[in-house]
Length: 129
Image (cartoon, rainbow, N blue to C red; front, top):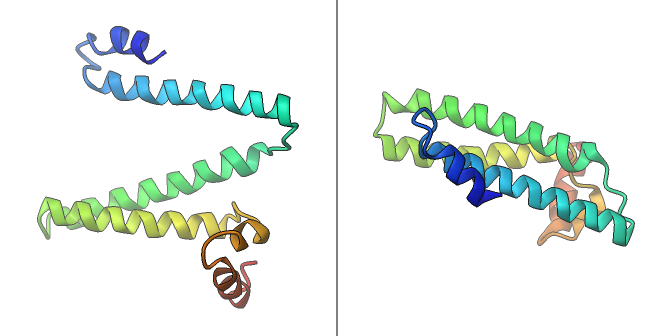
């Protein structure tokens, strides 16, 4: 998939090197689809589309929009490298908050994480979980 799309997209002048990125995304989407289909068929996983696709896409969209505006706002004030670093750090924090607020993980899944009990206690105090 990746090789074929690279050979098709990269030579197109309007797409150029961006074709390689598009090919990578398409390749990963195909691999994800095959893996999920195989897991559902063989292990009988009950994967809800909302939890595993919609909510992470929403969290990613929120993160991307916020980090873009943070980077754009800082670019005229500070150097490009520092603006990039701050935007990346902000993106990580915003994504984590989005995942928590959207309740992508159940309380039991959070408890399995390192320091999960502490995270759950904080989220319960904040009345998020």
